[in-house]
Image (tube, rainbow, N blue to C red; front, side):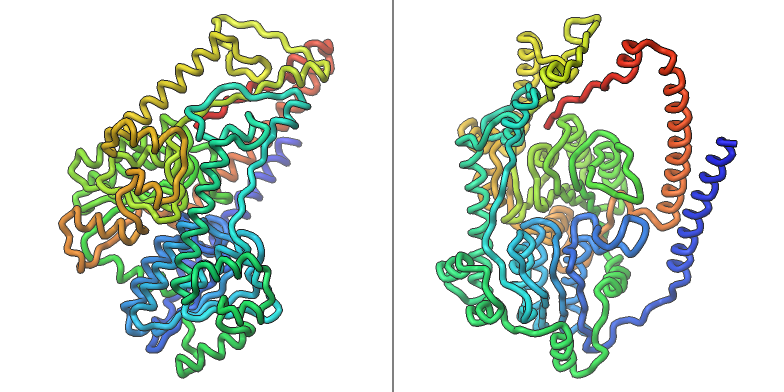
Length: 586
């Protein structure tokens, strides 16, 4: 009877998913064509979730509309600048989104749009005191007019970062971390190893924060026609009431959303001028499929060797090296692809997986394809390492760049177990067979082996950086040791070639491929985005597998519980032991 019920539930789950997917597919297939933009069109952008690299924020990967990616948004804005039907745009901004460099990329696209003689108005209910407030206002200052709701707030108070240090609490619990890092500026392990900031950690992070804040001050002072010192004073006096922000020229108008829409109608000279940006994205995307082809491969998230069970329902920011290397190989093998742009937004990850991506870029160049790398918000550690063979590396001024170093840690919980009266005994064949178990610390010989491994990886990393970037020993040492930089400082250190966004990277790719700068190009994504049917089949397959696994788990758990009842207590403890925890590496 139980098997029958489980089977029935699995079947119902399958039919339900298929039914939902069928409705979505039917809506997609039979949705009909939408009207094209008419004359004197105003694009309407909903940026209550700013676009990211993967186009998230518009629902799950399958259910609901997919949000436009950062690259798609920038491309469509630049096309709109040349579109005679479009006279302006209006945006609503609030909430969270990507980081500093992405905002700079969007600001450049808005500036390009306005340079074509078109208006741009942005509205926000409030600029709060969190990071989202500063990020959204920084973006808003690229617009012609900033509207703030009278009941809102101007809470742009600067940039702050906090780092938790767990060592004191872990010491009380009887937990410690062992391993090592190369070298002193490689600060990620400090949260487990140190009671607070080390001198190197504090110095590097403060330099980074000051650099990003300075860029924001410089850009906004120029765009708002303010003196930098006065702008800093105003921010230091925030939060401000809306009338104070208006008086200080930090916003242009106080009003509600309906008043903004009335202003749009006035400028357009009619009441039906608004056109959804997502619709325009699809309309302009058809026209964008002209010209010679350039491939764009996006490395977005922590770099891992293989897929770790991501779901079409949840998505997730994992850059799977095997899949992305295959995508680079496919792009390099297609005769129609004239150049490859690799977009990287990654804090790093597995060193071998990062090296797999680095080698894929190297192979593409060996096949005669120019490769240009464009950095997003972060290109650190393995994210930077993967970019090394590129013909040109382009970073935004605010890209967090570098972190040339390595660390490896493992938790040791033996003292915690002792304090709880839990005894764990180990039998092993091989002197180092149990070296990565969390119940035992490293022996001196094992720690020496870990140190050799860290030294080997750091030497390989720095040698490849030196060769690719042509840095002598002195410049290499100043750029390495785990330091992180803004894009501006990374260029000064010799780690990147040019400052700019994806648009500039594509321009370099065209030049390297011998394509005239004025000619249009077809930007093709590799791997190609999955269609609705493919997503549906993956979803159904994953749902069925998950239901079957849960049913099997319930069966096995029930059987284990039954059998454990007949075993002595010592055997039960052995059967319920904790599995080893893997060490942390980057």
